Image (cartoon, rainbow, N blue to C red; front, side):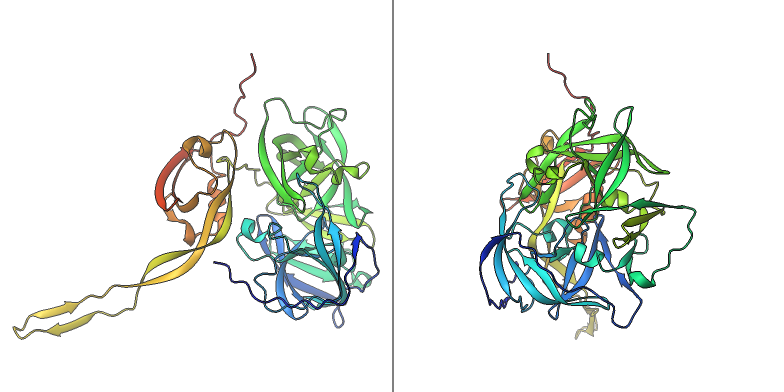
Length: 451
């Protein structure tokens, strides 16, 4: 059950417009030259604490957005949103239609010791725009350019911290094991020149650096360039969620992804449907995105002021790329009431009139709310679908583990196990608990060719 708390919105002006551009304040570190901020790494996404107008929230650090967006405010305490006007935002998704939002100005933002007293933010009230269910933790928004533009930012994926440096105080150190790339900023988003080998040719490509996506690599299909899935080496799948709806496409592999001297082999790639990425394809020369599953293999120094990014590989570098072999996508869909034994540590002893020892054993139970996880996407022809599982099924247990005792991402890890691994699940459907089992399959098993 989700408890909805009051949201206080101070409305001073309301107009209708499309994508207005205004000047605004900057983030700064009043009393420090740098500041270290811890983050959570959830499904390859960086989740940082941010204080907005006195209320602490959680935001994804997303280099693919030019303005902060607040979208999950039903679980916050009273939050003042100042100086608002109605606008429309457009993003990725099969619908492609713009969504209504509020543009709010003059907000107080604080991340670590960095503050901005005049920050713009876009507020989306559409309940479908929410990362919380997919990540299993409360996430209230995304922030990108407005933080990156004011600092040199170190991102340490291994130790899970970012460090903000004042650009005028940052000193580059010699690093023989690093590679430095020039950045191109377009619409306040960073692009990098790389190369990819899909089949036999190494192709130069231009990619958006997107810390707000958990995938490894997205490529826009282009037969003339050789950017397309190899025959029988792809499967159709749900690949993400954008502001304008779900994104579907083909998942495949590329033989090599090259970042100067750094080479990654057998890399996961998604080819999104063209209808879902019409906005992104308008950017001339862009061939796709490089995202969290690849970026987490490096520690980064991101410097917008000097338009460059420095990469140094870390201990994640050689980690293999895995796919979800079950076909199941889960979300945290509220809570379920769970009956649990409560250990009160008490056993009673006594004597009867017949001098017999009497032992009193009491069992106590408590009822608590625990996360509920349900199937929200199910790949056609997948092992889970063939076993009889359906969208809407609520997971009770997996391989003997009670689901409410596991984090969402831990459950999803079961589905990336070795080919042939047996998955046993108990699910609840229409009030009935049902058992299911299936074995994980090769997602690239040979397709049946037409006669």
